[in-house]
Length: 115
Length: 113
Image (cartoon, rainbow over all chains, first blue to last red; front, side, top):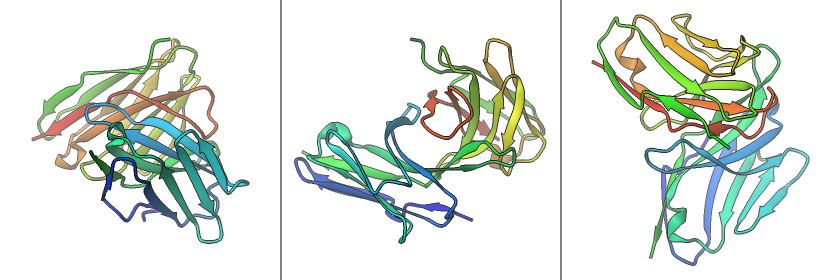
């Protein structure tokens, strides 16, 4: 049961243009969402997050939008740069069987920025 | 500030063997979570350790077990290895057990033959 879905395994974008990565979730109990970026041979690194009480969060070139009614979030990168080429994971925070929080990840989208 | 470190980075085992993976948490972090990332998949939550006790578990069998030590470092043990256990095992540390930003190590890539 894939509770967090990233339906685009890959995306190619010209340098300088906008990159839009999408994520859908099914569990309405998720209350916090995060995006992680992963380079080869490295662990995922935190990029940006958003609480379920907001619909937008911005940090420099990165903006995350949340549509709770549609259970959809997206990450916008403007302008895209070659260093943005990586795998991007969407993650949602929910409760474990002990009542604390854990992250549920999507399958990732490989973003390639074309110079 | 020292980041999360994991060892070994790569290892090869055969079916039925046992493996121990190690993780040192980032300084100041008291919680360690372990994730399994199979090829083409996102990381899947295995379990979390806080104050040297298991503090939440994902859908993994009991042959996956762990430890946390007083210095907050952690081990992941897998017994009776199966071919499907081949994956990247990621350790992540955090301050406290609440959901939010995790700091990941580079992972241990396990291949089971």
